[in-house]
Image (cartoon, rainbow, N blue to C red; front, side, top):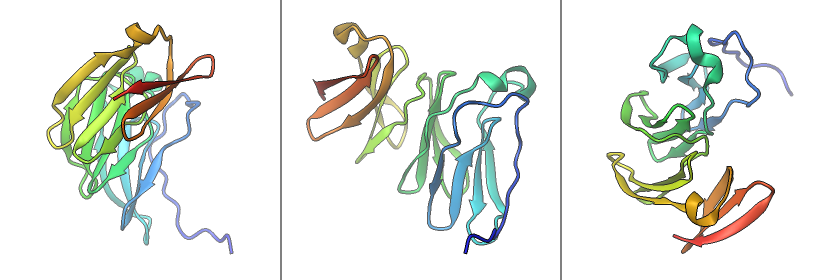
Amino acid sequence: NGKEIWNFKGETSLIKKNKNSSLVLDENNVIFINEVGDVNAIDLSSGNLVWQTPTQSISIYEDSFSYIYSNIVLDEQSIYFSNNKNELFALNSKNGFVKWKQNLSTILPPIIINNIVFTISDNGYLAVLDKKKGNILRSTNIKKELKIKENKGFIIGKEHIFLTFDPGQLIKINV
């Protein structure tokens, strides 16, 4: 009927970002990143905060307006996301504990296939990481090979990666 069931208000930054918040649902919670970079899990039934994990290592008031986060990806009991400050995270979706953090700057959401995490960094590297420990297994500079300026998005097929970039072009490359 459209009637409000519950409402949760979290931290907000002084400067509004253009990007909408990303959120995912697990069995019991809605998980999202707020404007100041905290990852929050809210109980679906009650609207109560279950856990909150800060992801910024600097003062909120100094630099929170310049953080840009990727969409959150939920895989099994882990959430994955990245930001433009050289940080790719894997958090436990049940308690918010950081499983691992890797130095990798990207605002594209990672893609998880089996035990592998794929992402493309802002400087054009295709990074392949171990899902459990976050170790980089392979890194290939596809930007140099393809002479592209800015990555817009990517998906992975069985044997190929499909990459979009300005000015609206699509490229198929081998995994």
